Length: 523
Ligand SMILES: *Cc1c(COP(=O)(O)O)cnc(C)c1O
Image (cartoon, rainbow, N blue to C red; front, side):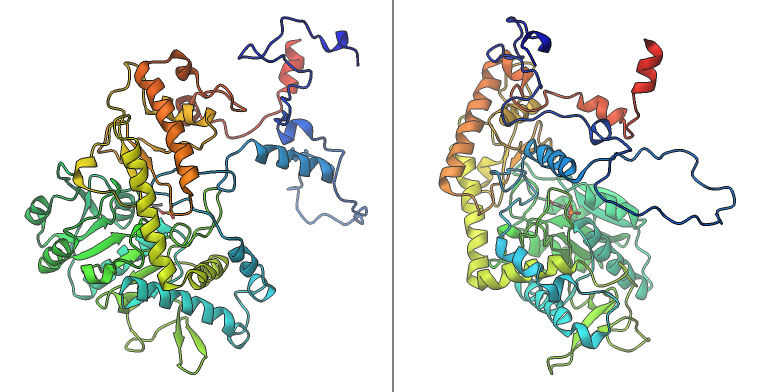
């Protein structure tokens, strides 16, 4: 192909004006290509199948009468397509992933190796119980670690995510209240709660009411106490909370709620900051979910499966969901699938999932627990808190930290957009971080802080990695404060420029349609 045939002209440059446009649209290792539907072709395939024999149709006229539009590609084309796409994305294996409240930590490869052992990976949920004793034993072991670490009486292993665990906890609370003939209707949730908390309470049919925060970012104990009464079923409190602060009044909160006849749900998604240091059971909590995919390092962030076991107090243990595992003390395990009244704990509220929960996540969590040991897990919490405080203090004077005066933070550092030049916002800082090669931090959450930026480094980052991130965030924040017009256009160096995110959310286009027929008609 000659230079002329490519249509190249000397004045052709890309957006930044310092690199020439390329024939392919590729920019060195950053390869451009269409959607899989655009590059595919129905006549191509990655497999060779024999012609099916002619059979008489029994579909009664419901046969498909046109192609369904699946892309056809050869195997190497599929491999290249998805490999190219993956290279345009950010991942925990590429660098620091500062998403606050998400605990994006390194996933040790040992966990993956264990999860792939055929004895675990090939297990089938309908196998006879005698043949899966090792699997049940592993689930039981993870459960024992969780009840020990939290100081709680029982654990429900089957919930499949944090939000699913919240549902499990509230269903247990509702069952316990109903069992004593107490039809309470209200769940109290702090202003700074994760959106899943009020959503879960509403899904369970409760009316949700807010508890205000104090100026130092913690639950207002006096306001909470004044709202408690015979209509309050439960409070849902995140500890450490979403402002990155430990709720020091937690034991007093639990005591007041219990005195008023209610129960205490704790959102344990931020357990990473206190694992091995604090036992939530000692703070009077009745139910708490644990995100294995956060604290216990099982992969997430790319849509991988979650796992949200729920630890329960003595008061809620009898209402735990089915199935649960019982050890007979002889090295054998039993799966309790149904309960007759009076047997076992006696009053399970029912079933959350078809089978036992996320086996692969249990194996990864067990590998993580056993390789760290109790002392290692305590050090996880200490290093995670140290790293977050290093970020908080290193950016003092550059970024406003609304609760910096409330004492050291826990696992995450919270900043605001206070002091940015007119017209500049948290969104611009997030986009600027993309050009710096980082995934942005959590933005505009918690809602109690204007233009919130929530940064959670986790314990797996080295000081060098933290220093590089701090330098990048400092640089971008200074640009936002100085009103650098180029920052409004960021990201300038990403595979895609700034998108119309509002348009995408309000008018999502979820189905690809072949533009060719219309294009031809227009010609
Ligand atoms: C992540 C998170 C949840 C929800 O957990 P999922 O596993 O995503 O359902 C709830 N609360 C807080 C504070 C969280 O960070």
